Image 1 (cartoon, rainbow, N blue to C red):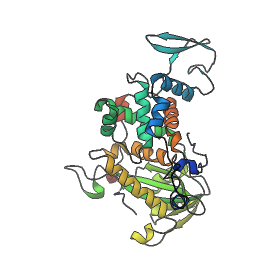
Image 2 (image 1 turned 135 degrees about the horizontal axis):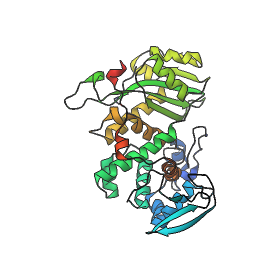
Image 3 (image 1 turned 30 degrees about the vertical axis):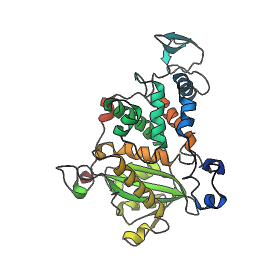
Length: 353
């Protein structure tokens, strides 16, 4: 068992093939051939972002399109006929069937926020384009807001990512592993008994020739057959061809999946052909979290931290679509109070044993 030190793509969508235009115009053909096309795509530059979302009107138009791509739909009765009016500088849509009044932000994660939409979208841009996880402290400095403003903003967007990834399932060839997230906190226990460690499962779907497609990673109550059976039902399509280490609880796979145990231990097992990518993603996850957070309650907020990495990884094929994708997720997610964001169920590594 490994110990972790460490455009919107739907759960069923196929990856977008990166083309030469994503890599920029100045690269020689030999350089392009030697590069990872996904990794070296141009993405959305900051000047391009500011040109597209630089003022409040542009951001309002983007949110309206994300929330109602086919035109206004009443959140109460689903009618489409409506009138519009302004009150105190805010535009409202009034349903002509039930008279419900709705603003652009109401019913979304941005509900009741006093921040300009352009600040919200800049936060989405920073979270999406960052190669690693971004702490609330770093987001505070980039946006020029206070920490009590940056923390709930980041967690609301992470919660939107979590909900977007909640129904994702992997199929075909899947590499699977178990690990722990988090480390010793000051004055706490060391090792796997640390109250800040949380057990989680990570899986990567690959092509037949071994290239990574999508990933899922979730905290679990423990590495028991019951806990992993529930996770398998939620995250794997029946008939998947799964490769894992020899953890006994993974035998739950054998009910509906082809299951191959990778023999060996240590580095030789990590570098095995059908374990390589799950270990690469796990290693990248560890570095990302270690680089972003230095005093973080991993055991409490593991689900959102993993979802942030998962959301970004599964949309890496077209970085230009990350802002519209996260905006759509934020528009579809419900409002969250800071109290609700902090009130999450905790599972620890100690309770998993």
